[in-house]
Image (cartoon, one colour):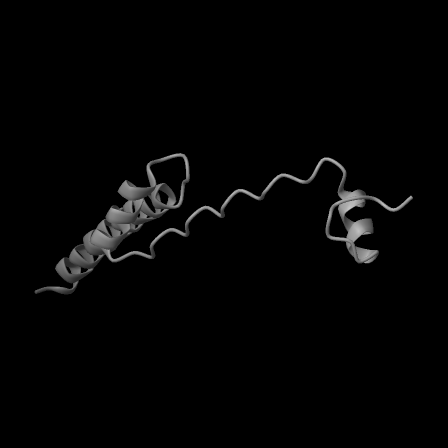
Length: 85
């Protein structure tokens, strides 16, 4: 193979590799986008040997209606939920 032919083949391979890297970047972005179905994203990641996306954290419980009341009762040693007078 001549030098010119080798350079041409190398350039074609580099171009194809760049295209494949772009596809992989798009797939990874899809896998980590929570707007899409989690099971589908997980299955795709497993199939392609890519890192599995993290699960969304569980929603935090809502705060009590009056957070100071419970804390004051706990500090006072009461567990019946009544505030001190």
